Length: 67
Image 1: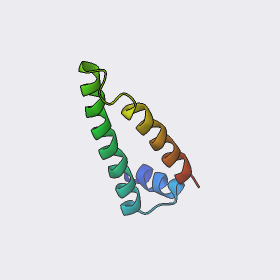
Image 2: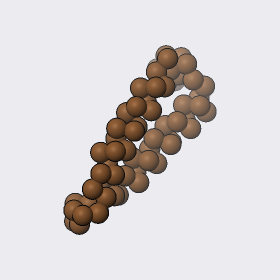
Image 3: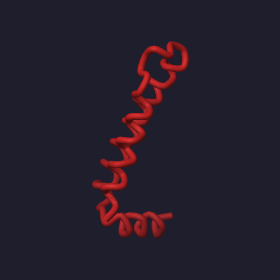
Image 4: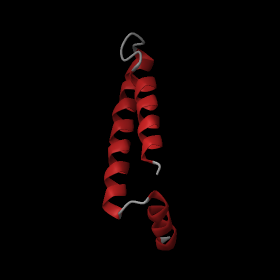
């Protein structure tokens, strides 16, 4: 597993802590928006565009990180 992790970090051209910071940031944002989507499922008038907007934003962020 360590060998595969090192290869992934090398492919991403990031250190362990750079990768961890980015992954945790994305994870937290997904956690928050998933909660908003849950609320939206019960009250459709709330958070009408939160999930789709965040998914688009995160997609662009992830794509911009590819080097």
